[in-house]
Image 1 (cartoon, rainbow, N blue to C red):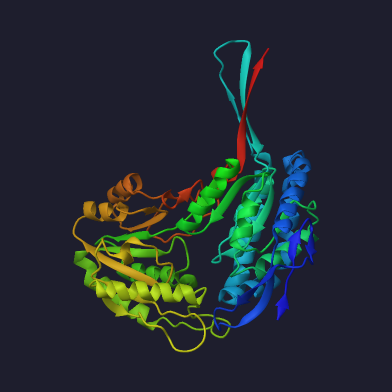
Image 2: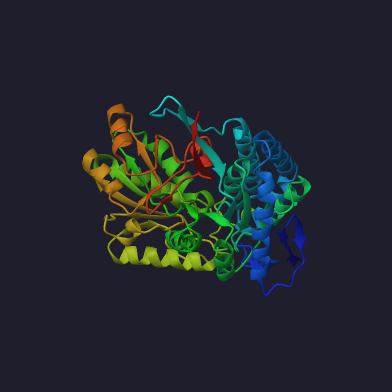
Length: 474
């Protein structure tokens, strides 16, 4: 069984762990690695080292920080296969998908490196002729980054790249479900010769994560995770009045109008719903279809869901892989059973397969109602709830009648309805005639319980800065 070390202060540290954390292959359920649970001393040392490194890092010209980020990107590109192997084994992704995630992270690093010459402030008109107001951008300091299990490398880069280019240092806690790819990434930090202490990556318990996030030098906490995790982070932020940046739950609605191409819709829905076994924040979770095309679309979806294979992707790369763990499968199956008890029609799926691994079949539920738990709560798995509607007004109201507001989707050829949705949908993103893909030059931000702040693009980069107003009398 492979053992790993935490990356602290620019080196892999062999400190005695209070405990170790087993890492399982979700396709087999077998333990294949052991990672150390960092101690409180470890994480406080990492934060202190980050604070010291940041004081020098922030003074570098931004173009030099950009060059360092390019070196890190180059190293990750050279090591993409190694990172991909670790990621595939811990997540259940195919080797091709896992390696692609590592390469996508490389592209994202290079994108943020280009912001070196574009971090700008403002000159604001004063009320007097002998005074100039300048709004400047400055780094926050030390950023605590909490990484989810579903896209552990891409999300890690999504957080540390903008943090570093804007002059911050970071301490990273990867998910205990998918930590080995983060340690493979840490090897690239070492090889890219970033300043010691600027980036530390440590696995830890929830209690130790609290110690890290509430350390005095931490000025920002960024999380991608559940609403419950976000609420915990907000409690952490109270200690230092640290800035929160939270991407939380999603419950993406898809509205299908009568003029939509149903073959295209069915193909896209199936692909989106079964990508990474539905463990995607923006994955479609509830589908609102016009009653006039309801039966025709359900027929297509039923056939597609029933035919979709699920298996170990290291053996069959074209199949749908497993859920992250046993607890996730038990939770999802219980939700499906409760939905059926409430009157939803189980068209396909909805059973626990025999054999090893945490697999769950693509599951289609029709005749759902807005008040059902399966429509109101995030499933985060390969389960789709379908509701019929009669008017576009009704569809817009149902799509927005929700606690979440991350992404949304509309299929129509009517530009008037498309613009109505663009102006009225209660979500941070609207995709028209396509499914969510989070373009990294955009801005990925949720409404309501889906989060605070956001990622990607100029606005995501500026999340990692704070302002200073300079009033110059002359």
